[in-house]
Amino acid sequence: MHRLPIALAVLASACVGVVSEPPTCEVTGAQVELGFINRFVDRTLEVAWTNERCQRQVLFALEPGKYSNQVTLVGDEWRVRDVASGEVLFEGRAPETNSALIFPTSDTRVCSGLGRDAREVNFRNRYADRALSLFWLDPACREQAAGEIAPRTHLTVKTVVGHVFRFRRAGTEELVEDTPLVTPTTELFSAPTDGSAPQCSEAGATTSTVGFVNNFPSKTVQVYWVDYQCKEVLAGAIAPGQSLYQNSFFTHVFKLRDAVDQSLIASPPPLSAATVMVNVP
Image 1 (spheres, rainbow, N blue to C red):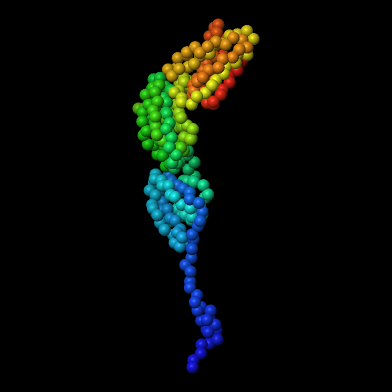
Image 2 (tube, rainbow, N blue to C red):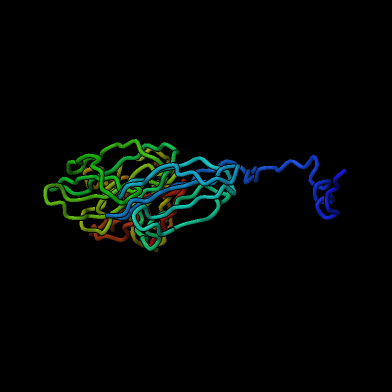
């Protein structure tokens, strides 16, 4: 009867019934969205995900100027690398909140995000003598034509929270300005905002109450509403030490003048709160 050497017998008995379990990389984090934005002009990126069996899977290639939003779990492992050179540009885990990875990471331009919350926004042209072209700046910072706005008119656009737009002078494509990010409360963007066009009331939808207080000891003040065509419409007069309240809307503009000589006393900014108080002087 043959016997195994003692060492081999011990090893064999230790291995009886042992089943090798495959490795696992499964995570149980909450669901989030992870965006990938390729702002390179000449580099294609490879986006890969590590699955629950710890196998790296290439999901897609991201061409220059393209972007993609992926649903993942907090803690999932992702890798982004240059297809041509193999250079790894990112390797890490999905964070706890919705976020986006921008390549190159040195690109700090403010362009549209990969949001989903719908928003309808009005874009108004304050100029009286020139049309404006409106462009959407996509996540890769490319301009996408959104429409043309005639003088003293507005354009309504269905967009998304986190998007950014650009005004250009129609015909010449001269840059006028970029808008801030669209927020959940954004109703209106007007251009220009640098004072090169008269400041007039805009067509707002949110109500506001504005109070005007005359603190002059002996001067009567007249209040004018500046209408959508920049014409001043008398709203009322305030005797010394008295006040006047007016129901109005966000983005409406008022001016206060001396009742005797019509000299300008105050030109408050457009209404932007539910209640606004204006004291003069």
